[in-house]
Amino acid sequence: MDIGLRGLASRKVSQGRYQRKAYATTLTLNRQRADYSAQAKVATDGGNYVGEWVTKWGRHGRGEFTKPKLGTYKGCWLFDKQHGWGLLTYKVDRYEGFWVNGVKHGRGKELDREGREYEGYFVNNLKCGRGILRYPDGSVYDGDWVDGLKTGHGIQKYEDGAEYDGDWANGKKHGKGVFVYASGSKYEGGWVDGHEEGWGILTRTNGERYEGGNLTPPFSPKSFP
Image 1 (spheres, helix red, strand yellow):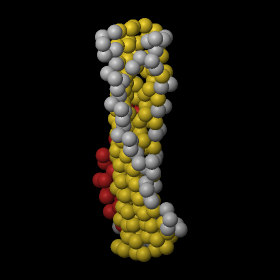
Image 2 (image 1 turned 135 degrees about the vertical axis):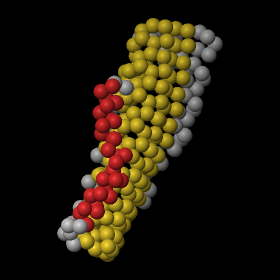
Image 3 (image 1 turned 30 degrees about the vertical axis):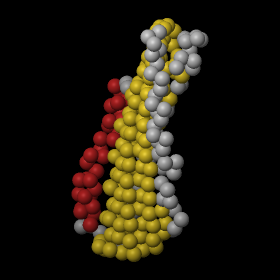
């Protein structure tokens, strides 16, 4: 992954390590300046809230908010927004991790309605930084993310045993990488928009080898395995 890109992703997510301490300090100070109620039951924002409440600011502290037919959030609040550690559950979807000003931001775990499980970093509700995504079919991606897409360096293991280790951009293999097919054959070289392109080396399990650019049949990647 480009050094600048790594630095950008790192800066965006580094604050997650300190969010617990910052949240606790901010909450303590704010309680001293407002009409603070230890517990309250309030109908607000189209749902029901049970937890710590500040008359001036609303949900502020720890509490549980349930919105009919949508889901439940249980965790920390600051100035009426999810902020700090919290668990959000829908009918199928689930997110547990850090929030900042009402959005997923920092380290967390997410299960989506398609059964995919992600564990890693988020920035403004999007996967960003280092993270692992596990698919229902057994495939796994472990690598870098930017704005919700695989971007940077990552390793993708497929359900049939194939594996790709290399560069990604906008969710596709792009740059240089090594793809080991389920058969054991291997391609090492350039990739563009998810396809093998440019200079590369193809090696069969029987030792047959081809090296060159813009590979053509019978040694094209599609026919190679």
